[in-house]
Length: 242
Length: 216
Image (cartoon, rainbow over all chains, first blue to last red):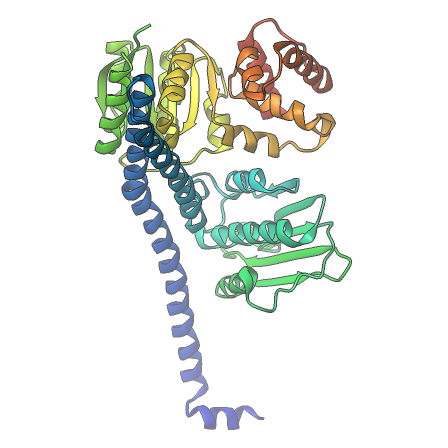
């Protein structure tokens, strides 16, 4: 199809199309930023509200339990109920903490990717070698996408790979943040049919990036996210220094 | 020993809860602050046995507590501080312990629910001990999987983790349901595998482990 025909079908001039692409790009970038801000707001609200309330509830139950245990005349049925309520409330606090961390880890905002990845590696049943070399902090949306790609890849590896070691590597090449997660497992990962990685592929694509997964049967599995960085602050090598 | 404690916590609910808990355990809450702006002055004036401090505080709700703890320690190097947080992070632990870990604690806020353990942790920190949350210890260990740590047996890793939490030999023996002698054997094996000089006191031992975790 020639460009004249396309123009005819779309019913607009080249200038109008260019204008439209620019408008869509701006509104998409705004959506990405709004989504990121919203995630942080939800995290903050949960932290200030329900998390504090639950911790206080668990503490009060802990104090009640201690008093009942210290006295000799507690009804065993009441003590058993309080014990169960105390244990359940502690579990609810821990579950909520993990849930909120999954929405947005506060340490990512405060200290960046490398610091945030620490708690992921601590929860990985497979040993993880981390090599994150970034001279400065990428924009929050990019940092956040990189973090969640790593989180999802580690989760998948733990579930399916049977690997003995995972390597996480993040560095900048030609104004692009390259995040690679490689395991020495059995491969054969199916990422086409739903799952967390296909959702992340859209998130990465919205940042003009690309998410690729190579997982031949027999391994290894390699997840690679390439996220372009703003060229004004991350100039390609050889570019004149401003 | 009755402790004189200053609490810095912006959530009214939680602050009042912790005050109740510590008061009922026979301790005296001498100061309550909603943010860290006047903490340095308050510590200078009251000289408490312990400061219990939240990490996220007004005005920015990020890491004010960590910065405040570091500032207080540089002015009052022996001030015992227990930092509480909704999340614990290896990076913050490293910053808190960068100079000296004596009288420093870093725990998940939800540990207050285990009332007896929490008061015990307060006492250990006020007494100059180091108390780290098991979650932080797991993060510190997971970042150093290669090298000499590979040589540690699962049991030795467990013992190392409990040491970094500030547990005594007796405490470790009780938790693992083994004899104190067995714990001592594990510890001397850990120190020899990591190439650390075994030291006399429990505190120096924790320091050696932390130093190793942070700098290797």
